[in-house]
Amino acid sequence: MKRIGVRLAYFVRTAWRGLRASPVTSAVAVMTIGISLVLVGAFALLLQNMESLLDKLGGELHVTAYLEDGLTQGQQQEIAHLIGTVEGVESVSLITKEEAFERFRRGVGRGSALLEGLADNPLPASIEIALVASRRSASGMAMVVASLDGLDGIDDLASGQDWVEGYMRAVALLRGLGVGLGAILALATLLIVANTIRLAVFARRDELEILSLVGASHSFMQTPFLLEGILQGALGGGVALLLLFALFRVVLPGFEFGLELVLGGVSPRFFALGESLALVATGAGLGLFGSAAAVTGGWRT
Image 1 (cartoon, helix red, strand yellow):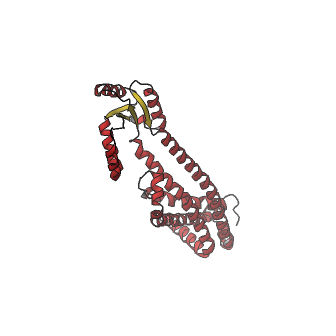
Image 2 (cartoon, one colour):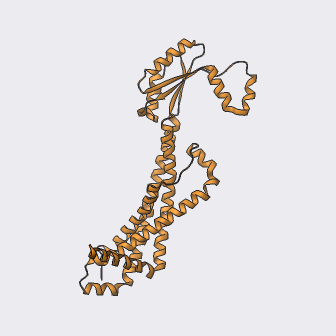
Image 3 (cartoon, helix red, strand yellow):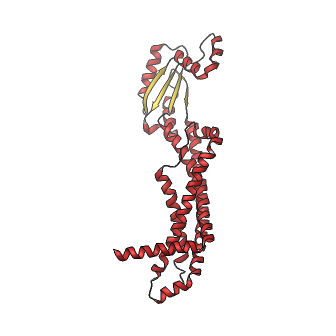
């Protein structure tokens, strides 16, 4: 155990000395990783908030059946009971013409004074239909709407199917753009980190030759360079996390109204602790793979 500790301490000291010996190239690698993760992290942050909206609205998705005029209260209740037996329907709520008008009046706020001049209530009675969990999606709503279409007493059916489908397409497009951008930036980052490590190997070739002469294995000589890559990546991930947090706090107020439209009024949230650590770990992983590409296969002493 003591031997392992001594080796680990040597590897860490050597890696840290390597970073200090080439501050410019190390800083370039760190900033490259940081900028790449800022761009990818911004996509991930927006995508996360948009998916949170879908999760939030999932339990609120419902279908509204507008009833024909002239139906008695008993007929309306019969239709509501019949709808409640349809597969995929969790519960129904009958909204009378009076209740619909009162809701509308509260919704328009100060504009409610304009409604006082109406001779008749123009709003129809309706039935709000809550769906079971398995049908709270665009396809689930479409199935319920198809089951209710043509039912006697129903004048029209409305749902958020089109909105949900459009929003899901936007989320899928954003996810695809994020993956594509991430792949391109990851490749560029790996190349820069690999070249940085190659420069470090070249700068310490005399030391490596001595280690080779005294019997040091390739893995022993490679480990400090792998640790350098991990440290560079972790530092880059930390830089990206700080920049994203600063942008979130400073820039967000200026785009608050636009984000409310995109996110449907859901308050944007920053990465949780686990997600923040994952961002830093991603940077460390990029550094590790970049350094591995530099020292594995083409190793020379």
